[in-house]
Length: 336
Ligand SMILES: [Ca+2]
Ligand SMILES: [Ca+2]
Image 1: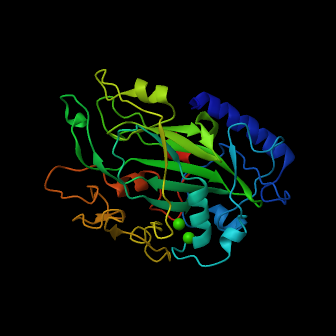
Image 2: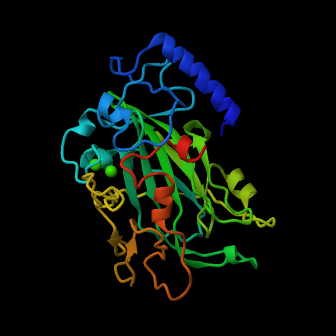
Image 3: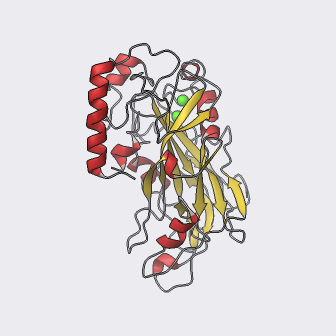
């Protein structure tokens, strides 16, 4: 995590180097190192990057040393140019094969408590951001939040648990790309001191094969960067969360698990939803369908909604980070 002053100073220093050494969109060979922290804010379909540098990539000049000290390299096996040539079912400029490959390459590894129930159905969205950044939203889709032993409402068990992770990626004209930042949900939007959601530089988390490792709190499934952060975070009122390290689970990225883009929010833009309302893949006998692109549609983990109030709508979380737009803003803009 950086302070605002640190980010401001860093952005200023980088901007000075940038202005004196490179010009936008010059040919920088096969290494394309993005300038960090120079976002101008959320972009629209008609952003300058679209018209100046193609849909996704705007090479912004190399930085000596390569990769940047806060980035984590990951060989995704294809270049950004290859990502823009082929079938693009959701119409966002990235091919289906690219979105699947990128989602698999950066899918979070989960350190879960050995006695936790992490029954889940995973879905993901891959969306262009500004410059050469791409954001991937990983929706864990836990069927149940098993609660904690305490008296407040936040501690109670309920159907559905809509925790998520967002990974920000710097695409390259080279098979090696970079994980730049990660957002971890931890009871996002819950009050009472329970919301420990935050954005991190990629190197602030442990990583495996270029993808982040997250610690998943037992029963309530909040995401933390470490066991210490998990057990020091808690649910408020001194009630601790618990994390265990005996198992390493992974986010299952299916070819038909791509949510696509929200066409409802971008009429006429040519974007398409690939998954909106869907039944449970892992337990087809469950009674409910869950919808990802309907505002305010609470998530019940495919289980009967009569039992309780479920968990927060995935749409609302996608929209908070701009995944309902043609381009999502950088994580640093969504969560400064
Ligand atoms: Ca696409
Ligand atoms: Ca997409």
